[in-house]
Length: 460
Image 1 (cartoon, one colour):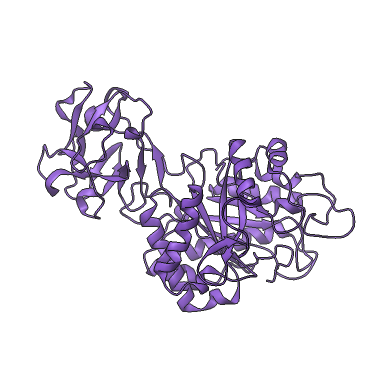
Image 2 (cartoon, helix red, strand yellow):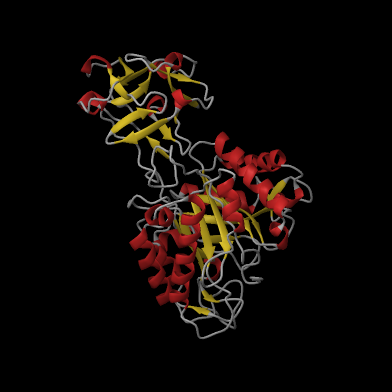
């Protein structure tokens, strides 16, 4: 696919960073979540004194909304607050061993599983337990043989519960993030689209290399101070956020310009840190991405980014045929231990007019589901919740017509299976044309933002 209308997204590989494995806290999904962990008498798991020092006690305390009570349930099995891990003191498996905060080192005493309402240590199989079954403030939390008692019951943040994606049946504002591109097509004011449709998130395209390994918008606009920064500020001031998209079809790709996985991870991190991001989108569609070395570099870099940014979502968007995508990158990622929040396909540019694009999209999506099951040994439900669809509104590069009704078909499929991502290229084109198909219109009879309004109904 050349996707001239999309300029860089016919084989988008939006890699969303969150691992899935049998050791995860939320084994039914492929995403992390941040929020409070509540236990006995509705009180919160709390870091004493809000201190991030190694050895700080973890306790029960009245919920107060502070950072000391915000825990990120990671896809690597960790539970983190204030940048450090929930840890069993002394790497002990004994009843009564206290919980503390400690630098994340990857040990079994820092891995946890939410099971049956309990928080179970991977080291001992014992449960996080409120000492003495008392709900008094500052009561320390320990591990103890699991009994099913109230002092061992915890409500853990649901994966995807703080912003959509990754399933869970909750509202999914992050999952619906149509592409917005400042490079052409009379970009719409995001405030106009947000007010008209209710959409709060946008996938902002595209971050490229300036010739070596330095990320810039379209490889030439600085990360801060320009039109892209202004767009981000506008979206955030209206209660939304953005997902920068790396890559695309044209221009110099960071993934091939950077010489190592470490350099590439550093380039990704520069953008993540510049904007304090909650998600990134890796858009891989140019020939350079077919190179096995570039693929492995990308996978390894994303593993590093994921480890260094707990809770960050990573989307991977790839091209597809009507029976599903090429599986080489998915298999490479699975074999390397990289799982992502959403493997997202672009089901269009199949070739030829007159096709039912809604039905073909579902066929391609079922192929993706089977690919994820085979690569990651997922169940059907796990695969659905770890995948997405990135369609194209209106007339595609290959003269197919994706109608508003096709979007309704895709929406119904996504709702039924709780997909992690539902997006399209692009909001720039979600307007009627005055003369022919262009970068700023769809080429079909429609009102402004009709396609966006359909996907805005998605609830995850």
